[in-house]
Image (tube, rainbow, N blue to C red; front, side):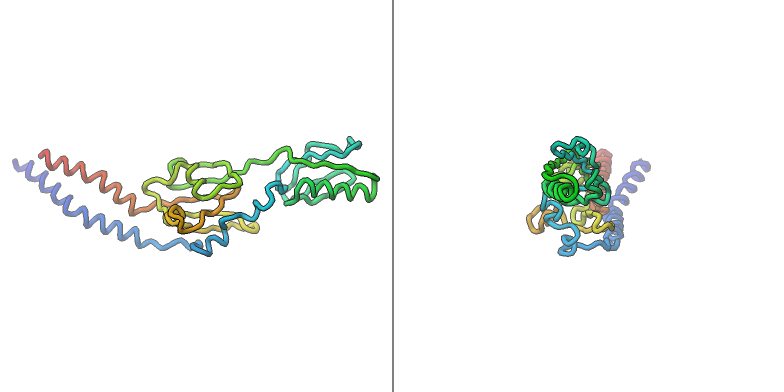
Length: 240
């Protein structure tokens, strides 16, 4: 009998101490400082709703493999003109040619101009993109399926997180970070996913190379652990 009273006493002490412990834990979690990355309007200056790179969908990018056809000139024709990291290709008789952010038509016109200026009277050139490197973004943190996913021209933060099977129940959806390389430097911005879902804020566009980081909400995690554990003690108490 004394053992039963002792067990009940321990349980009652635990139950009475639970709210105090939980409050202390949650208060300690809430006291953590905010991220230094910009949020609100400043965030959209780094990761805008519409990315400038999508103005020309056929614009040549580094890593693209081009096919060049020069009519009647097989020695100038080839399928392995790969755009280097600086946006250049090397073509016989034409020389070094900047092709970054240009369309295949613009490249062909420039090649015709150079060839006609020195070598061919009526040059006819066609350029096409044979292969492009994979365009991906990464999703890390408190999502159901973190990983690397293909970036489409219309990818947004919401659709990107949907590909990662959405944030978990303990995710901090009010402070989602997007990391991006801007002018050769790594930059980041914070977004409130709750506002975006409710239509109160724009859904920023996600481009190739972005990394999305979804943090964990210590408060949500703490309450989840408390709610999962408390019923066990309640049942134990009732049985006794």
